Image (cartoon, rainbow, N blue to C red):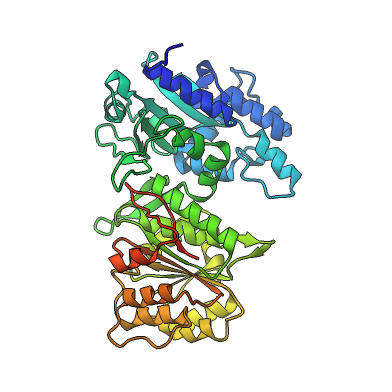
Amino acid sequence: MPTDTSERGLETRIVTQLVERGWMEGYPEDYNREYGIDIPQLYTFLQATQPDVLPLLDLEDENSPTRRQFLSRLQGEITKRGVIDVLRKGISHARIQSLDLFYGTPSEGNPKAQAHFAANRFVVTRQLRYSRDETRLALDLCLFINGLPVITFELKNNLTKQTVEDAVQQYKRDRDARELLFQFGRCMVHFAVDDSEVRMCTHLKNGASWFLPFNRGWNDGAGNPPNPYGLKTDYLWKEILTPASLTNIIEYYAQVVEKKDEKTGKKKREQIFPRYHQLDVVRRLLADVKQRGAGHRYLIQHSAGSGKSNSIAWLAHQLVGVEQQGQPVFDSIIVVTDRVILDQQIRDTIRNFAQVSAIMGHADRSEDLRQFIAGGKKIIISTVQKFPFILDEIGGDHRGRQFAIIIDEAHSSQGGRTAAAMSMALSEVGEEDEEETVEDTINRIMESRKMLPNASYFAFTATPKNKTLEILVSLSARATPSNTNPITAIP
């Protein structure tokens, strides 16, 4: 049988491989265009997990005022908070104090949580007719979780002389951002895909829509490497969008943040979905820490302007929860930066997942630093200038505890003796050279392979010296938009 090289053939291939990985195929006629929900899928999920609420919702009666009130409430909450937050936290409605709309990753040894997660309905629907007015318009693919749309696709195929750029233009020209499905926060992300490249957009604005690459990188450049087992872009649906992986993204990465324009004072909301290189580097770092524990060094080459602040924030937050044999690997995560914007970025990121004041402290004074470390504050944000005041405590009074030290721009922007002193505190190497630069100090520590066993060191940089890269022989990696083979680690 000849290979189907059409756009429809790519669509079939994606759906088939998603279904093989735990998705179900949905029916386009089940999509309610007025409320933007696959109601049968939502009903089936609630019936399996919270059957006692169904009589209060009356979802089976299309003419029921009770049903209309609930669907209006759900639609309003998604409009106000975004689908990410609604999935993560659920909603309240009438006499229902808490209605769960999604169950996250179950903990080991918790059969109830595992049963709840198994009841989630991950559904892929082809040729979705999404518009109330232009009823013939159809989207190639839409992914739903428990009836709520989360991701859309426009597909093209190079073999038919159309590329990912044509898919981008289709979103810009033909997918009206005023349509309910395409409004801000209704979906987490929109993917333009062909057989070679992937691009993503989190906020459709018609012609002003901004699409970013979601590629793995190839030969220090853009695009994706050859794939002897399938399409260059099949990592998207085979790895990134599996039910387990997408659940992890919802739990720890995807978010809506509110930002204030310092000039106008106006606030605007921004939706964030991790790019491939961000997701890959953080996941690899976490996996390595979980396997090997504390006491290791990592150099992460992460280009400026490619979301490094978010990568650092996601790493810091998730390092808190990494365990070995039921115990946390790190007592505290210390983020050292000179950038106020990163400080705020970490606060905004963590605020979406936890009570910030409970786990995070910003140290303006050396005494704050000492108190946070002594008190076991989980995430401590400091500056290079403040850090020397606690170096002796990390290497002295707190040698029995374990730390993760995340350094922003360790090799290029942090200068002078302050950062060098910080590096020395993590090392058992001899006295530093008076003229030694920060990066020279780091390189010497790496070459010596002697570090305090209670500290792991994560250095994020855009421009490491050649000497630094030469030292990293055993494992090599970079986290940039075009070249993403994380992580670089020194065992």
